[in-house]
Amino acid sequence: MAARFLRGRLRSGPLAAAVATVLSVIGAPAAALDEAQALATSQAAIGRETGNHRFTDQDGRPLELATLRGRPVVLSYIYTSCAFICPTLTSSLAQVVRVARETLGDGAFSVVTVGFDTRVDTPERMRLHAAERGIRDPRWYFLSGDEAEVAALARETGFVYAPVAGGFDHLTQVTILDSAGRVYQQVYGPEFQPPMLVDPLKRLALGMPVAERPLADLLSRVRLLCTSYDPKSGRYRFDYSLILEIAIGLSCALLVLGFVLRSWRQGQPGPRPRS
Image (tube, rainbow, N blue to C red; front, side, top):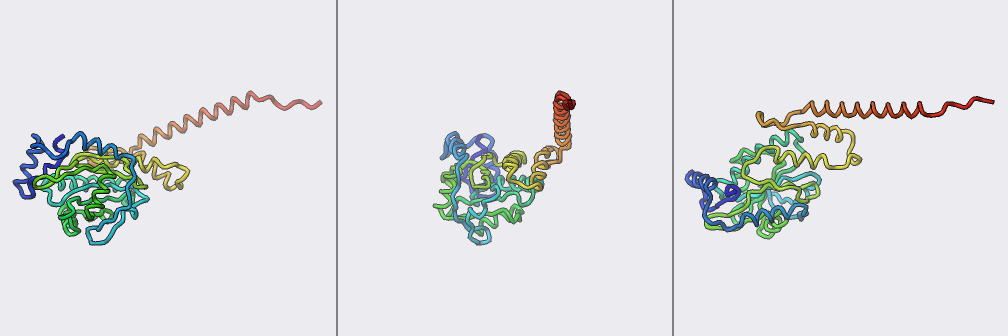
């Protein structure tokens, strides 16, 4: 479990990355956070609504979180002077986001990465963090904010962090918010497979009442339902077996309905003869 936490005492450089890797495998010296308590705090946030916090994006433009309502948001936290775990988290997330966009559509969700070292994580530093990972997604916002705004959002989403010598200890957490800004699910670990992110987003897309969606959206839901993850290719593929199962199920239901109607009609008395 030690790999979930950043033992943030080394700032940068190859040696720092190597040491961080070793620490993530063998465990690290005493951390500022209790992992069990951090996980409990994170899980307790599920179902909680986030507020309309104000930040500045990587291009220096103001952004209110409420403007992202109406679609799910994938939220991560980093600090830009992190040597290993935070860059790994962002790089892994970037790969999974690409798969999710291919599966769900480019406009299906937004991504937000918040810098929680508020004295250091300026818009320029956040822009550089994105650029170094080759991220050019127009719906991915790298945000800077003042300490009060960052701390408030962290509390609402169950993200726990604490300063230590040379950096921070924190849970490597990605939070999925629903379209109303409520915490829907937490995903942990600096590296994860696409289903860990795509499947919750699919469930959000499929969870809306059918009556509220037009036919085009209903067909989109069927497409989402009938996609399955192929670990060999690292992509989602259309699963025609699910379509076949649905078709067979509908056919059987129609046959049963037809049999019932036919039996009912045969059991009805015929017209009375005229006297």
